[in-house]
Length: 289
Ligand SMILES: Nc1nc2c(ncn2[C@@H]2O[C@H](COP(=O)(O)OP(=O)(O)OP(=O)(O)O)[C@@H](O)[C@H]2O)c(=O)[nH]1
Ligand SMILES: [Mg+2]
Image (cartoon, rainbow, N blue to C red; front, side):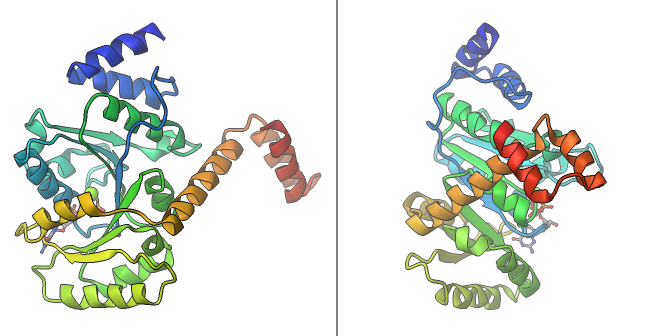
């Protein structure tokens, strides 16, 4: 406990190694001596390859120019070489992370059978406590598990590309209902305008009266990135979206309780043998939870 306290004090005074070490301990399941719920974060999600990392790199440039710091928690960062983790992404994030104002940390969901809920929130709180102005959570893809991850952020930015297929996929996963702001990246490519129209018309049939803005950006040319950063400051969430996020968080907690239950193996065996039903299994885990 005192090691955590010391690390936190050092991290607060700007020691990045202590910060990294502290985050590792939290990832390993230690509880930091910190108040819950003090940090706020922006979740960034979108189909694979739409340019999330590139765009974050450009957003970082804008914040750094304005003297604001940025910490990125990159969840399952993709890399052409396994184990190469964040390197490829880091290079794409310009060279901004060499600056004192930028901190990038990767997180692998495979190390967390119960999901990231136990460490994501305390990590955001630590980063906030240590004075990071902007805290981003980036996921790869926009499927159900990525939605569960960004639902822990206070606001969600959905990044899409000019490919209509991407949008339809994203819509299926229900991510559009959760997004507080939507950007179509790669707007240097010809189909971007059409993609933006398609997204807007999909939004217009939604029930939420606070429909998110749809902006065109290009991580390559930098077009629209400054406006995006400004817009993020003005973007508020809606109670409908807050409810959806809370719902996803609850499901994460539920899954975690199941997957980390000491009963899990026994229950699986009993189910295999047919000696209990699925409903019996659920009841038994609820009692032991
Ligand atoms: N034309 C164009 N290409 C872009 C733009 N932004 C990113 N790209 C390219 O799109 C590819 C994917 O970019 P990334 O930034 O890795 O995308 P990502 O969404 O982070 O990808 P994952 O993390 O794998 O989901 C790269 O080849 C980029 O160079 C853009 O604004 N315009
Ligand atoms: Mg990426």
